[in-house]
Image (cartoon, rainbow, N blue to C red):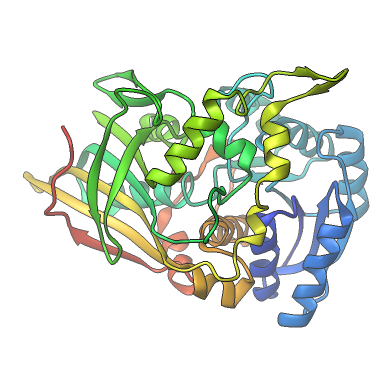
Length: 405
């Protein structure tokens, strides 16, 4: 049915390509490309061993538009899936524009010199993609991604009007390391050390970062995994949901962190290891956070022996038939089960599976259009149906708990 080029061979990229290979009726030809071809070849061998499917691999520098264009023209995909670094979103979008190929990613653009991620740079491509007659689908992971689709589903089926959304992301698993991040350490640390923001009554409200004095947090009773301390932080899906969920008065994003993680992070920040600017080390220019990334465990190596579960979902409050209603839509994912299926931990799994489903929606022509789109702008029903089929089943329950005001 379609040819797909996947750029990025980290933990998420590995899950995406394996799930594509498991759905060969849709993904008839697959290429995995990365700056390090050896990583792609290792994934190719695993796919041949565990799934019995052949894929192609290639070397490409995702910062280099001419290289990307040459590879796209050579492979001739119907869709490019970007699971490389957020810094590379715009170069890959430029290559898709030049070649007239549809684009999809899981995380929005972030400039190298500032830890600030927002959609303005990618939304600015709207007219270019529309004029070219192709589409760009942004944020097709879990959060952003599935959480956006949950909100769209709630808006379509569960509410007449939505007033508040709280996105709650809990990793209750254990990888046995003193300190490690579940996805790219550089991106993860840049994300969680920013000051927090949430939307309330028509404006963004800023609060301290998770390791700063005055950070906002509370203990939430997650389904299956129980109580975990949950910290308010900024996450990009809030920016697009504010635009697309009608009547929204407040939206917040909460993520769980253990005390050991926070202690390590605070020390690293205090000694300057989370800096993103260059420092001089014996005549060499070094970016501390990139050096830190090199000495921390590779996220894709955390899968074996990872125990526990994730619980990610949305608590949504609004009105239906004149009555106040609160619903909780969520997924539980098991680290060990994820490893058994795709040799990866649940954080990569919960991002990679939705990326494959988003690509499926495009290749099947279920989601189509010209321009730049966020995932909640499309019909949520076929995506929600595939979540149940592809390993991320969801639940909807009445919410009886309490959230901070």
